[in-house]
Amino acid sequence: MLIELLNGVKYHPKQIASRSLSNKLDVETPISVFAISEGEAISNEHSELVKLIQVLEGKLLVQVEQEQPLEIKTGEMFVVCPKQQHQITAPVNTKFLQIELPAKD
Image (cartoon, rainbow, N blue to C red; front, side):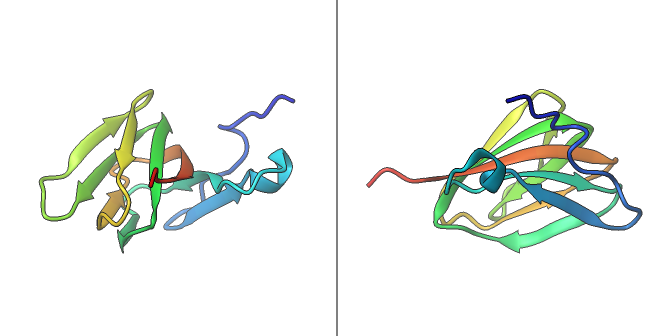
């Protein structure tokens, strides 16, 4: 099965668009592709799961807890540990893949 990640979701001005791949892959693991238009953000959130964030196009600023934001560029992956407050901002139009995995007990 071929999945074209960059073509799977489109940019919309001043919006965040996403598409779940979980059903298509027939898995319970949350797997999604996001397209965030320039200047938009996913504000403070946390999860019980480990988040793998792979930038496919553009770049993200990821701020975990009260630390300085890190710039994640195309081809780079960032890992958010379970229960960590984090915020994701797109300084430019950006697409990324997010995979959420259960933490090891």
